[in-house]
Length: 419
Image (tube, rainbow, N blue to C red; front, side, top):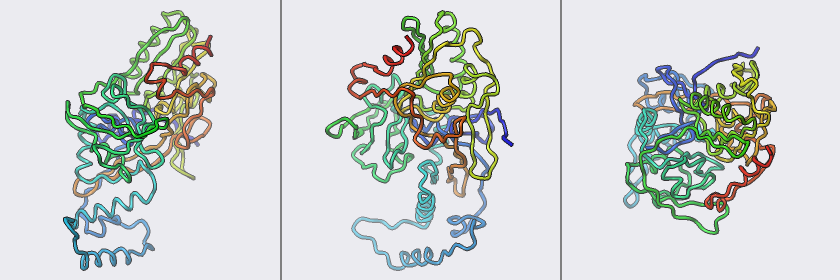
């Protein structure tokens, strides 16, 4: 039997230890570093004293049949025979343990399951406490490469011409090959008025681009409205704590406009609070309609989040378009997928990012922590958001040249569709 749940968790999903909802980590919005807008649930903590072996392999071991003889053989060979070459300095035991744990975590092949040594764990704590100095963009891992998911409006990242889909090849000359998202965040972060140089691989560019970006204090935008003839446009930039209240105000403007044709622009929206997606979806879907499913794996009971039916009644749009692109992620994909599958809106634009997983943060010994994926988001029809994202009903690309020139064929297509 399906469980239904009202929540203030975030997508993809964070519930902090104090039970007050926070913005998540996984995709990384670079404010300070600030990792932002993907799912993390802060769970049980573990701070028990541990021996070297139990710290690496758990206490108790998950599988008693695992033979660790070879691991300790390699450890002892390195301990007894390794000689530093050149200026290489051998790591101490703590660094070796962290390296072993990191290797174990990486072996799962999930870019959102990450081991955070004390320095990174402390950086995470600072991020969720609200340090907003940085470049103003979100990055994630795509096909093994550090990729820009979305630059935020009116930020240094946008002003520098960075685009969704840009691959970060180097950060201040340091290669990102094999680098984790958190490692990239640590390098890009910095104080206001300092500069970071990003080497960018852009799909339609003939050569690598060197893009200097001056860090600044970032103000996260929420929503903007405009009208094109008889079509009302709401641009939602993030599902932050005030997204629903901002949407209420925007919908009041929509009702007063007399329009019954609506465009909801979710391009470049990296997500945020799950409750924001559920609440906003409730304005367009009847009570009881499934907005998103949370799957914990085969044989485990899923949780279902449904519309509360706060519909617009006679003011509901007769025709509605949702604009999406590669920068639309997590909560954006949840909302867009629900509106698409229930026939409430037509999706126009390009393929979405495909980020639909839930992470839990677990405290470990010595102030390190483990971020582990524990569930997946599914659309109302049971399709995995993480498997390729959402495919628009009408696919329209927007090239980097069009973006930088201020041309918007996706919005043009939406306006044409509604007229």
